[in-house]
Image 1 (cartoon, helix red, strand yellow):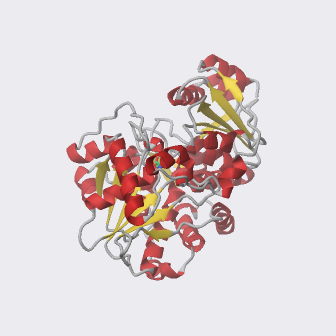
Image 2: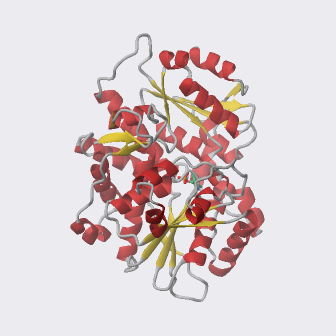
Image 3: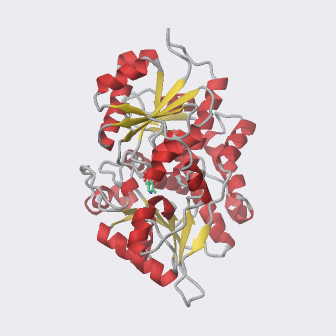
Length: 446
Ligand SMILES: *Cc1c(COP(=O)(O)O)cnc(C)c1O
């Protein structure tokens, strides 16, 4: 499969190049040249298949031309060592509901980003082993992943790449601005993971990473790539979740008129769901649930895309003022506002509404929402029509936001064993100023 850039000013790329480079030369995002439809028999029998079996079929449609089947199946199985269940959110005293949640937080760091991070690590490793990479004189053959994080991405990427030979990961995070649990998830690992504690805010971390990608000396010195959802190997595997959601709902006899609601920030996750739809996945329509960062919502209303500085909210993994995957969605529907609005609706919620939703859902159903999932739940409450069944993604385990969730629900929610394990390790990180000169000097010595 060949990949083109959404800006259409860069050469067509192989999958290997798209994965290793991340972003195209013209700063556009890579898109596959065609999207394969899956056969009707697949959807007819999907409810009898496991998450892993479904994912192998979907992965083959995306990557089968470029990766041998046996290797690809291994990558998928290694990525999906956990489950992704649908759970009914049923009001107390009732026996049925039209709202379900797809729990995406059963991975190693309890983040849905675990799937894309692990898949990308394994695919990159496959290319490093098999490819005849062109070597720049004097450049080390190791690939270096730079990732700026406000919490979730760093932990998923660090754990996904942990121990993967030939790849080194640098996680840049703002000092004192990530939760203690999140900090432990990427500073205690050691091995090929280096945590860099930047004396600044998230935007400073992102600026350091961007400057590094642009810096000629650094690019001559080392091979650099990014692991956020601009990378095709990180966002596309998230489509597995949506095929699985359909399968599990079909097994319950609830897959007709299914509406999928995705709490969104950079729009990588919902974009993967839309790729699934383009492959024939019979989901009736989609809802993108936002916090107060309402850029996509406003695009749907007006047809104008107007990026804004991001606003800080309770659902901070969705605090994005210029969602990078909007370019992919726009391209997928050839820029047609009508095509986009006929398939996708939007919703936007301020912090007070998020709080109220968490409290109401807990009181009415006993289900503990995290602030991100709360946007999804409320959007279905507001937008679901008669005869439809809604499934919203619970994108984070509530314990990852324990301080907030406990305070809002006046509760003391349990921390899963897997999260507690991370908190036992010793923190190791390199202090760094927000000045690019210092960061460059550090990397040139690596
Ligand atoms: C990353 C993240 C999101 C947003 O996902 P996008 O793919 O960026 O739209 C939502 N919720 C949580 C908990 C996240 O970590």
